[in-house]
Image (spheres, helix red, strand yellow):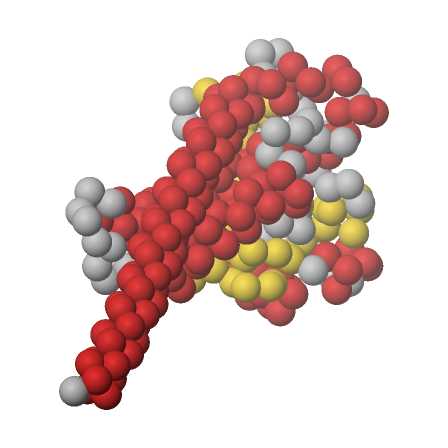
Length: 261
């Protein structure tokens, strides 16, 4: 089906793809969802990623625009993309080589394993970009923690940062299951060594762990700033109440003084 040399492209398109809306006529596998697209294959993931084998860039872009974007939930403003070459060499060790990935054959299961790792890689790359932007937003808040007042800090911005962190964590753990093995390895355990090689080469576990640490730090920073902001506002309200009580006592004493004289 595939020649000894072809390309693979991985794209992170949206927060989620509604796979139930895809037409089943070209479907050749359910887990993961795999479709025949012209002379190539497309492996589609519900967390918004697609990995396409054996299609040129124009054909890949048409497939994305015509088939996937209509079922995309919250499309990304910036599509994360990664492209590599696949070399089919039967008598050489499998793994990542200079300029691409070497496989012993172009079997469906091998391509699906490659798709699983590349999809997680572009997902992590997309979240790494978002985390960098979130840190840029939270940095001014961190600097204000050194001052007596949290000037210019908006509760809505802090809540937005916390909410964004929770959504990323939910997607990583709930939808993408980045730290888990793909289900097809239960039926093809002999391919686990290939999966581990690819996973190590793209540093999926290390990047996932680093991203989790950043998520935790970002969330704790925003929550701490929010708590300090609320505490200082509460303290300010308490002082207003004290001043009102003192003013009322002063007015009462003034009235008593006037009545006596």
